[in-house]
Length: 122
Image (cartoon, rainbow, N blue to C red; front, side):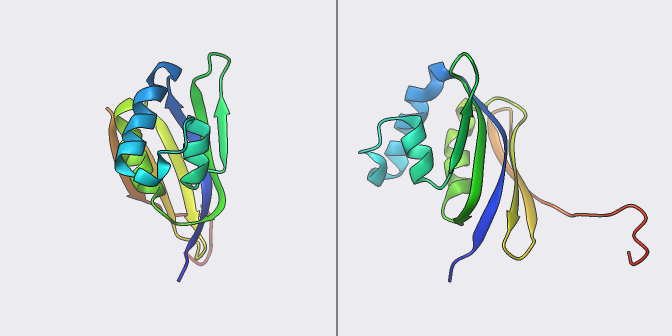
């Protein structure tokens, strides 16, 4: 059975750290050895959208609608090179929400909850 997810956010990795990130991901998943750019690896790992700033630093990641694979493990693997305030807000096909984020180079997965101020049914 498959579980589809989507979401995105600001995820910051400096260009100078790309070689170490690529190596860490290739070491963890042998099937990535043929991917030699960060974009190709991230795409292969289920991140369909990436964005870079004028310095070439990674600043954005998104999963538009993909099966949940090991995206959380990918982020945990690259967390040692990610900057503080890196995060992705995610939603599952059943409406579940969670946050994947990095603080002090450590990966966190935080369950989410949506509330609506003034909701007469809450």
